[in-house]
Image 1 (tube, one colour):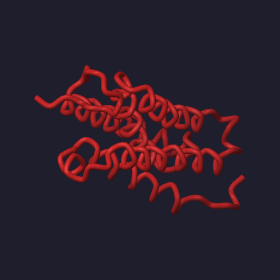
Image 2 (cartoon, one colour; image 1 turned 60 degrees about the vertical axis):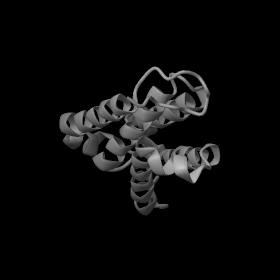
Image 3 (cartoon, one colour; image 1 turned 180 degrees about the vertical axis):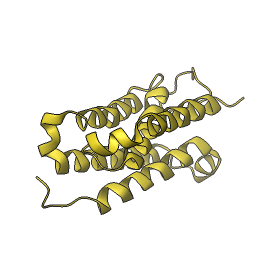
Image 4 (cartoon, one colour; image 1 turned 90 degrees about the vertical axis):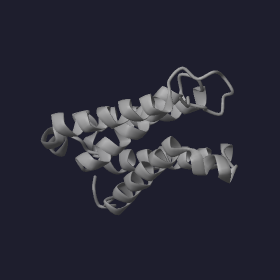
Length: 150
């Protein structure tokens, strides 16, 4: 069974299928448990944005068990999501969206900088799925940013 190979060079503790499974389950759970609630209470955007970000953040946190850089990215994504739920921070809606877009952009760039072997990338289904989710998240965030929001 293939195991997660972050660029930290340490032995992996969680397999790729398990990381994917946990991340999908956490994202689907967030959608099922709180889609309506997230629409009302999250200033980051639609429940889709929130669930894609949970997927990405969970993948990076699980991979970060072996690589601190990935952990920082995952905590950044989840931290911005949690901040979007705080009512007093709703006035920073645009900044939260742009911050999430920035952190996710850095994870995408970091992936291709550290994994520049096209053969490896073509076989890395976990990385490809995560980057596709992050591209969807970026598309949603960037097309829904209104500069007139306060």
